Amino acid sequence: MSHMYKPLISVLPQDVLHHVFWLNTDMLEDRGAKGSPPSALTLIRSSHVCSSWRQLILSSPSLWGQVIDFDYLKDRDFRNEVIRRSRQSQVSIMAWDSLSTNAQAADLEDIVTFLEQHWDRVQNLELYLRSCDIRLWQMFEDRIWEVLQRPAHSLAVFFFSPPSDVGGTANQPLQIQFPPALNLFGNRAPQLRRFEAEIIPFSPRAHWHRNIREFYLTGTLLLCDLLLALQKMPLLERLHLDDCSHEANLPEVDLSTLPVVEVPSLKSVEMWIGVEIATPYISFLKHLKPRAFCLPVFCIATGKQTSSDERNLSKLDEFLGIFSAYCGLDLAPTIGVHVLKDGNFRLQAGGSSDGAWFEVNNMNPEVPLYRHYGEAFFPTLRRSAFRFIKEVSLAIEVGDFVFQDQHQIIDFIQQFRSATSLRTSPKSAAFFKQLPPDVLANAFPSLDTIKFTASPEVDEIPSVQAFVRAMRDTGHQIETVSFPSPEYLKEFVGLRPVFE
Image (cartoon, rainbow, N blue to C red; front, side, top):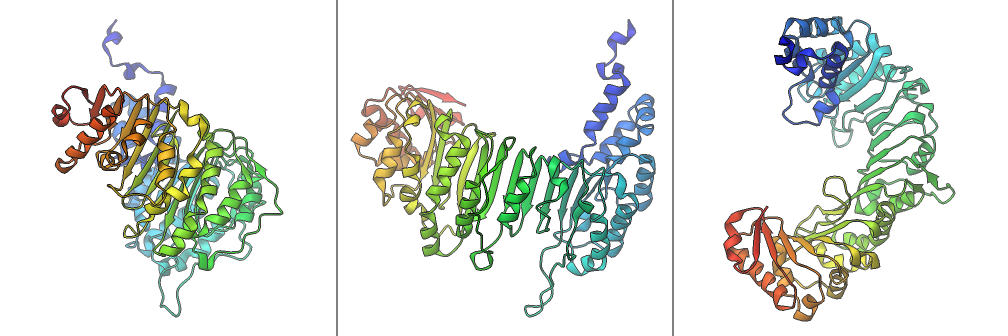
């Protein structure tokens, strides 16, 4: 009976307990969790809890193989002991901070030597050399490329970021040199499921594509090669593209002769590009057919060329149409549109954490690009299906500014015939309250709840009150107004204020 009073974890079977420790050694998860202790430290602390845990951990080489963290294991003797405990198990290697601008030759020597000696058992590899001094990189680049061209029979996760093209002089800049006919993994990496790399060339016909589930690319991308590669990825679930190209150095793209590539398992397409190269990506997306109701995330950044940005914005309605087709916008349970005074535009379909979104990031807030959004986006967002949506999130934080295409925004607002709940911001109240009464009367006719996403500043309270009053005066049966803070609820006597 005494075991009934022990903590449940103390009576777990050894294989279950081993799996718990295994989950705690996932360095890939640790990298995305701010403030979490290093996996190696967690494993060591776990081994100090009791003798049975210590015996299990010390007799499990696979646990030690998962925590080869060069950022944490800075002491060479300590690191060598951890490596010794891993024996011949598969290993995970991570080096981020240890390869920063302060890295020494000895730091990179240790990492490269380890890869040369243990490449056959590397399962997960994360090398972030982006901040590494390029002269230090040049001391080891031949050895690194030699290792990366060996067959990688155990490799499942590959993250590699070489140094940026920095250094040298304006007349003689230092450049990253790739080996001629670079053959990653000797064309053999049968277990590879996640590939994440910056500015590294790859063969579009490589055999290691066949089991890829997640594909992340950063840099100037060759879209023709990428489409060819996607034909070899029948299991791909997530595609992430971050293209830092500019119009001046963008290669010519002609995808007209390529067939449409169907990837039925592709459930997420993320794209981060500049507005000046939106056109070739529109062509690329038209040649890519993911699964129905996938989750696109399209983020487009504008530059500082006002006239160029305005001209390119007019093309983005086509981009927005592709977004709508990808995510099934007509069937979205919720819809959100944000127009902010700094020029940012965001459309969101579905939930806030797992939904699809389309965003324009204005990199020059002094340029009022929001003046052109009425023409660029709102006509594409006129959809008969929106009349059935019950909850709408709408923030137009541009004060009492009148858009050049005011009627387009009005037509958009008046689509939501069934919406009973409106999420908005206090800053948006200034826009809503200046709309004519007949416009407000036809906007959200079924509305009974207004949810503010932030508490108003003191100078915003009159606008918030005027907006709520105007909605009630135009026949809306507003019963509930909610704020994230309770201090403003007393300002809305006669309603049912709610503190969320």
